[in-house]
Image 1 (cartoon, helix red, strand yellow):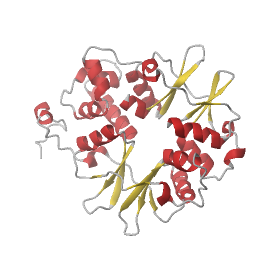
Image 2 (tube, rainbow, N blue to C red):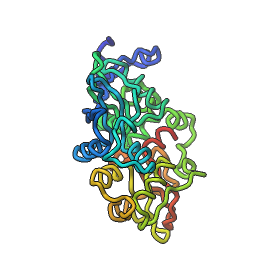
Image 3 (cartoon, rainbow, N blue to C red):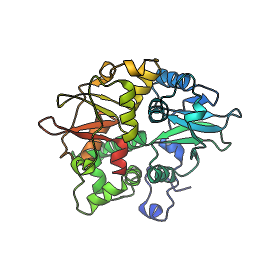
Image 4 (cartoon, rainbow, N blue to C red):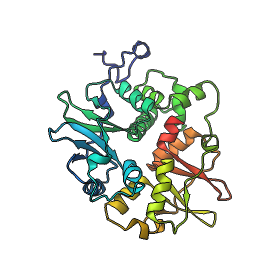
Amino acid sequence: QLPKNDGKVSLSAVEEGKDERPVSKLRPKKPMIASVEDSVLSVTQMLASKRGDAALVTGLNGGLAGIITDTDVTRRVVAKHLDPSGTGVSDVMTSNPTCVSMSDSAMDALATMVENHFRHLPVVDDCGAVVGLLDIAKCLNDAISKLEKAQEKSSAAAEDAVKQVTNLQGAGNAQSEMLTQLLGGLVSQAFGGKSSPTLRSLLAGKPATVVSPGTNLRDAGVVMAEARKAALVVDEGELVGIFGFKDMMSRAIAKELPLELTAVSTIMTPNPESVSPDTTVLEALQIMHDNRFLTLPVCEDDGTVIGLVGVMDLVYG
C-alpha cells in the first residue's frame, strides 16, 4: 500500500512499477448481463433498452462465459445473414474473454486493453463472479475529465487538458499516468517535439466506409463489418448521416426491422458534425471528449469525405 499523497503517485513509485491503484479505481461500468441460453435478438433488445453496447454472457454456473458487443452483432450476425431470433448468443459471442479482477492493477488492465486492442474488458470479483466492465472510451474520458479538474484547481494555462498531458511528461499525476498508458504513442511523439499526427496522416490510404442514403441495412452492415467502422452516408458528394454499430443493434436488430427492405437513411443519425483532416489526433480526442462522441467524420473544407476516426483509431493510431 502506498503512502497517501493527495491521491498522486510519486514518480519514483511509478518508475519502480509500484503504482498499485486497483481496477476498482477506474470505476468499471455496471455490467449488462445475458445468459448463454439467450437469443441474439433478446440480448440486443436488453442492450437497446439500457442503452448499452456490450453484454457479458454468463454460463449456467453463473461464471463469465463470453462477451458480445454491438460490433459483433453487425459482423457475426448481420453480415453473415443469420437470423437474430434463431441464433443463440453463445454461437456468436467471444467465448472465455480475457478479464481482470477488481483488485488487479489498474495500469496493467489498461495496458492489456491497449496491447490487445480491446474496447471492453470484463471485471470479475475474487470469486470469479461478473461485477463490471471496463470500456476504454470511458477510461479515456474519465482521465481527461479528471485532468481538466486538476488543472482548474492549479489554474494552469487555459490549454486543453489533452495538450496538457504532453506537458506533464509523467509528472507523477495519476491521471496523466493513465492517459500516457492509453495514449503512449501520441504522448511520446509530443514529448519528442514532434507535433501530434493529423487525422489526414492517420486516414491515409484507408478507404472511407461510404454508403448512399438508399443503401439497405444489410448491405450497409456488410460494408461496416469488412472495415470494422461505422458507415458514412453520402449523397451527391455530401455527408448527410452516420450509421454506427450501436445504431444497427438498437435501431434495427432489436426492433426487428427487415434489413433488406430498410434504407439506412431512415434510421441513421442525420447531419453529423465533422472535422478537418488537418485536426491533430490530440485535438480530435478533446473534441470527442467534450461532445461524448465515439466517432468523428473527417471532411475537407469543400465537403469531400475523407473518412471516419473512432476512439480506437486514436488510441491505437
